[in-house]
Image 1 (cartoon, one colour):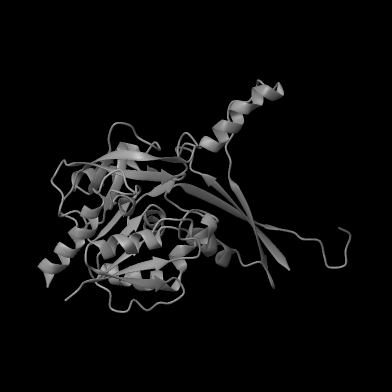
Image 2: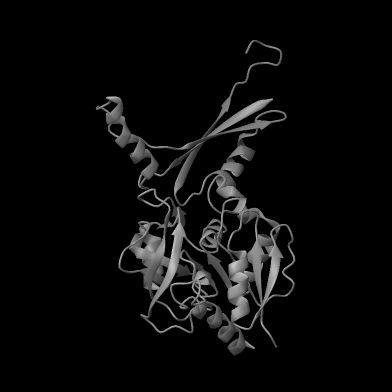
Length: 226
Length: 86
């Protein structure tokens, strides 16, 4: 059976179409989910895309957290549904307390967009099983508030439990502590990543096709679970 | 009508690059004796009836501030009586 991957559109989402296309390229069916609708239509996984949900008012992701769809996503994530938050989606996951810490203004204050090298640090999550431990990948980063912050205890916990999923290498684009680019929850089903794997899925438009691994990994994860 | 004012500030240990940028601009105004600048948010909540500090605290805690990076304080602010002088 074809896996059905939900992609949420909030007011101000920008990368929902790109995320849906990445899902489509892996052979799975992208299902559009709407912020004001609590219905998840029985999807097998959910992607919260990049953009500026609710105009980034108050704090990035702060208002999206209280949308109807997020109530369902939070509940389903607790039951093990794979959830991926990309960029603004990562911010929403932190605001929703599905992931620890917070994403703050880039330390140098500039919006940063460029192709970014990452090292995959954990391959035990629902979204990274197809990578090799320590694999270097190249995907675009584009954010103004991507600086990952957490207290020492949280950082120690993330590091100690192997929950740092990817780290920036050859330059930290935003000042994130411990060069953190992606983290996961304790169960490994929820992943937040600041750079954009959905922009690195086709040779024509991306710096690589390294991003595809995120979307194929979740299919393998779902297949193994069935 | 009653107003509760919520001040949200980044925690002291969190770097405030906006505040730093402002501080760095001050010498261009000829100001040399400022040690630091930090930027926060002031939010005014108007209640229909009496000011409900507990409700305001809940709003601040759940939505207005992110406890991972921010602290907040709140206080009731007297508003001029209706029809009074502004």
